[in-house]
Length: 152
Image 1 (tube, one colour):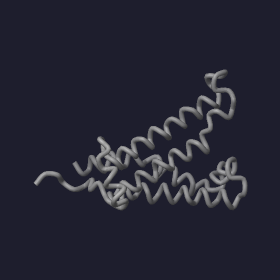
Image 2 (cartoon, helix red, strand yellow):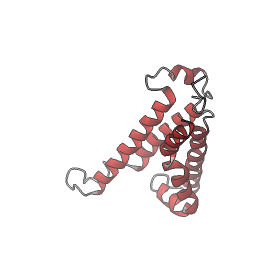
Image 3 (cartoon, helix red, strand yellow):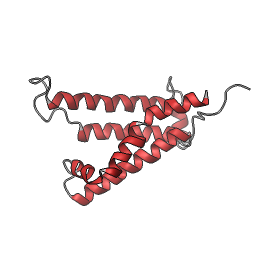
Image 4 (cartoon, one colour):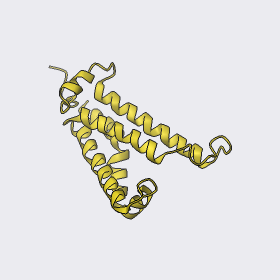
């Protein structure tokens, strides 16, 4: 079952690691350019991209390894929400209701995907019934022990 758990965790973070992180590295100039649509000063945009890259790598590794995976999941969930609000502003183009193929609708689906993934990550952090939320608050670096066998 350990391989299955690893595969599911990899599927959960694959968007961030390797794909988004690698895209930021290989197309750093383009990522900074896109970021400047929100953060105008170039040095600030560079810092934001480097921060995002760090979050994508380290939080994903936390989830994959099971080391502080709850905290990693929460950090990625918050990251999803923040990037949705900052970069997926479906309300801005003004064509949401008037053009079914417009930019507003495209951004809307990306916005929802960010929040859906964030919700799945929070589920990983607190458990299916929310009972592990207290564990996260009392010991933020705790692990869900994803690779520990439950059979004796």
